[in-house]
Length: 189
Image 1 (spheres, rainbow, N blue to C red):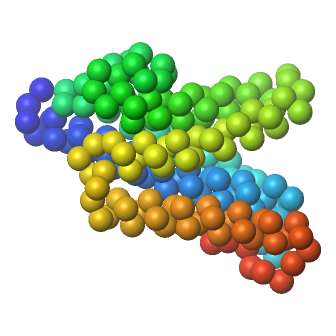
Image 2: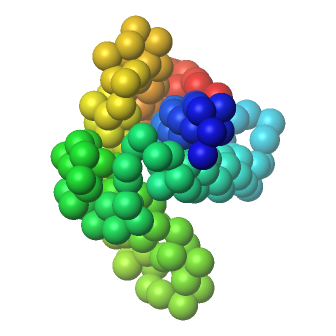
């Protein structure tokens, strides 16, 4: 692989990982906000659910690009097994392992969603709740892995992701307590 190709793969790996994190954040924010069937005024509920699904799929596409480029990048040295089996990577086993755990949680959510008509709703919901772990694992993987881990721009992106999810959780808790006048969280897309 030429230096240009290796650099392009490296940039694509890092960029797709960050975009995937931002999209996964949006998915979590929408998931938290819409769990009680919230939707913007003058919009039917299916619009919010469709938006949640579309962003989820887009996040999976960027996650796929991130995984493929991590395997292809000669400097990253990530083996196929390390993508799905946590903590077996030759380099940075802990941080790659957190990414693998997140990837596995997203995979379980995808499979259960495809099987949704054939599995009990309770099981699907349990898996869906479990998938919420994908976000903090992906966040930790992002801030702990690679040469950008301590860069200001990544810390700002990660901080914005944490703030968005935190705001959505606070909003949701206040709605459940009966404080209806608060505005829903803004989805950072």
